Amino acid sequence: LDPRIDAHVMFWTDWGQNPRIERASMDGKMRTVIINNKIYWPNGLSIDYPNKLLYFADAYLDYIDFCDYNGNNRRQVVASDLILQHPHALTVFEDFVYWSDRYTNRVIRANKWHGGNQT
Image (tube, rainbow, N blue to C red):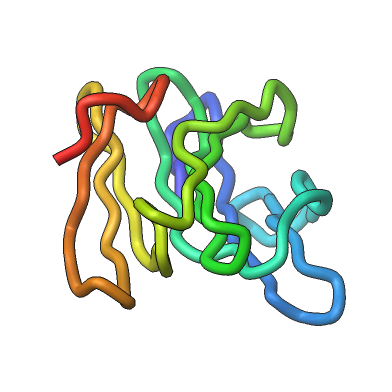
């Protein structure tokens, strides 16, 4: 959720027959699919509030990407089945993205822009 006055939106994922990430206004109106390509098991969502970016993980395709609130300007942060074996939940704080991996039972962090500095 981004309930701030200038945004006032919510996001969610759907794994169904047509996997996607959607956005709607806080009253449920203006529902829009923002991501529906190169996505299979969309898991964790997190908002980078200062930059108005949505970060998301795909547990099947093994990547973490981000995009703007309209689904545009999509960029990849990390993509590797060695690092991302089953990303589940994620969050963004300052210059890092943190995620939990259900397969390795670890919490990992990386630079939110380029995926480097992993620990």
